[in-house]
Amino acid sequence: MDRIIKAVCFGGKARVALLDTTEAVNKAIKTHDLSPLAAAALGRSLTVGAYIMHNLKNKTDRFNLIVDGGGPIGRICVAGEDGAIKGFVDEPRVDLPLKADGKLDVGGAVGRNGDMVIVKDLGLKEPYIGRSALVSGEIAEDYANYLYMSEGIANSVALGVLDDANGCKASGGIIVEALPDADENILVMLEDVMSNFTAISSMMTEKTIEEIGNFYFGHLNTEFFPAEPIEYGCKCASKIRGIVRSLGRAEAESIIAEQGVIEITCDFCAAKYRFGAEDLDTIFGKNGENR
Ligand SMILES: [Zn+2]
Image (cartoon, rainbow, N blue to C red; front, side):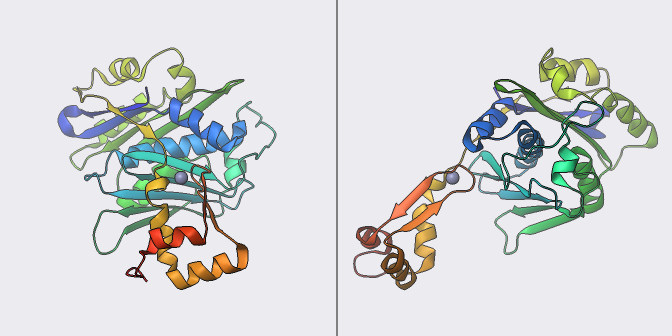
């Protein structure tokens, strides 16, 4: 089961999160027919998304994460709302030669001429928008840089997606953030622990994230909190009528007059919706009260 385990170390001077997003990445592979390279790029981003989502305070809070580095994959978009994360990439079949070390060239696919943008809708008047330049396009470094540049947090991020013939064998990550009381010693110790996670997804094929957490962080005066499930999915069906309504009845009627139907495809889950003239009364109300 996909899940996140949060903990505080050094008596509250740093926090750590361990995430398993294997099922989410397999669902994304099926939904979008992702190439292994696209699965690695989107999978790493989904792990970041799961982390952002599980740090939002309220159930109604939402976020969008957009990575746009000018590379052949196009944009990577991840969103979280209604308790679930979801994502897509512009070019799901992107493919590049492996790097010299035999790893998928995620940085080459994403590019580094652009930004990582995170928009959080916390139910306030204006959404919170954070933005940082991409460092490598490998996602982990880029999110680490985002946290540091945009939120001023010393941190370390390890992310990984391991593919096999059937899809994704393991996907997840470990994210540590120093809290304001953390001194130089703590930062050095955390840096040292994090150096073990250069191949976190391979490690996850042998150990659960609970075992990894205990083994590598257990001795650092750490308190672990109960795992929280990570859900992947799209609930657009409940919102689609609202989207048509936002066109306004006159515009909706003119689209149907021209094209016969209003057709909307959800980028996140590939669901297709079609509305004809006969649907307009239900959507806008018979007496035109939503006109
Ligand atoms: Zn959808």
